[in-house]
Image (cartoon, one colour):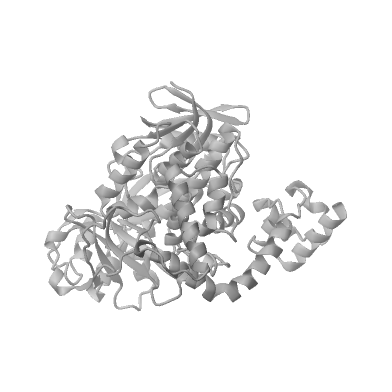
Length: 571
C-alpha cells in the first residue's frame, strides 16, 4: 500500500481533526476507519459546545478546523449558556442534526486532496526499534508512514454493558478494537480502563410535548465559526421534564442487575455527567432530576433525553422512562448502555501529545482519558499538527495554558493525569478573563499562521477581521452588520483590560519559570530538601521545567523552592 506521511487511526472527532490538521500542514495523510460511512458520527448527545467546551470549539476553528463549521452546517437549536454572566464564562452550545453534521465533516474532508480515507481495522503497529513507522490492517495490509495518530475513542478494548447483557463494541452495532488494545499492552504502555454511558433514544412522536416546558432556540443570530454557514437552518425547541420519586424507586429496585453497582464495570465514569443510577445513589434526597429532551434532526423523529444516561436492564429502563411526566406513552427505539474501554495514562505523553517512549506515535481523544467531542477535537488538532511536524520536518506546535483552553487541557492531562474522564470546565483556566470564546481567533491566529495550517480563504478572512478590529479600537464603529461581533469583542477587551493587565504580569512570571530546566526524574534524589513523597509525585509526571512542576497537584512551595535553588546551583 502507498507510503503516507501520517496515518490516523479512527474517524471520530479526534481522528477527523487530526487528519485534516496534518493535511493542512502539507502532509500526505491516510485516515483509517472501520466504517467510512460512520466518519464524523456523533456517538452520544447531538450537541456541540457548552461551558468550557464552546471555547475549545472556537479555538479549533481558529486553526481552520472542522468542528465549528460542521456545527453551523447542522445547528437546529442555539443556546448561549451563562448569558447573564460575562463573556469570559459564556458557553456557545448548539443542538445538531446528526446526519447533517456527519455529512458536513465528510464534505470538508473531501476537499483535502492529500487525504485518503481507508476503510479497515488497524490491529497492530509497525515498530522499528523505538519508532512507529506504520499500521497493519486486519486483512494483512501494511500502511507505512512517518507518524501515527491513535484516535480510537471508546473502541479500544471496548465492552458494552446493559443490565446483565455483555457485548463487545465501542458503539452499539460496531466492533471493538481488541487486537490493537492487546498490542498496546504488549508494548508495556501504561494502560487503564475508563467508562462512559449514553441514555436510551426516544421516539419523539410518542412524547406528550404539550405537557412539557419548552426551551426555545436563541432569537439572536450567532455562529460557532467566524466563517459561518450561508444561512441558518430552521430551529427546533427542546423541552424539559424531570424524574419523579416513582422513577427513583424503579431505579433503586433495578440496581441489583446494574453492572455499575454489581462490580462488572471496573472503569471510573465521568463525574460531571453521571448516570441516573449514580445521581439517585449519590443524591437520594432529591425529589427529581432534570431531563432535557433534545431533537436529533429536522428529518428525524428521534429524541435524546439528556440527563438519564444508564446501563440498567432494558425492562428497568422502560419502566423508569415511562414514569417521567410527558413520557408515559413513549416508545424507546434504542436502550441506553455503558461502555468500558482502554485508555493511556496521559502523563506518558508530552505537550505535543506525542509518546516519547515510541517516537512517531501521537494520541488524541478518549485514549488520553478525556470525555466529550470538543475535548477530542482539540486534541486531534494538536496531535495532527505535530504528527505532520514529526513526519515532514516542520516546527512542532504547542499552546500554553495562558494562551488557550487547549493548552489548559493538555497541560492538565500530561502533568496531572486522570482518575476519571477529563472534561473541560471554565474553572480549570486560571486566565479565563482573557481566554474568552469570542476572542479565540484573535488569540490564536498568529500561532496558526506560524504553523502554516490556514487555507488561503481563512488567511484572507483573518486579515480582514484584524483590520476591522484595528478600526474599531481606533474609534471607527462603521462596521458591517455581519461583523458586529468584532465590536463586542473590542468592547469586552476594554472592559476586562485592568484585570487582564494583572493576569499578564502573572503570565510573564510563569513563562520565566518555564525556562528553568529541572534535573531528570532519575536525579531528583540528589536535590536537597525534597521529601520522598515529592520525589514520587515529580517522578510520575516527569516535569521538564519549574513551571510544569508548579502545576502538579500536591507539589508544595517548599519543594518548588528546593528545585529552584538546585537549578540555580547547577547553572
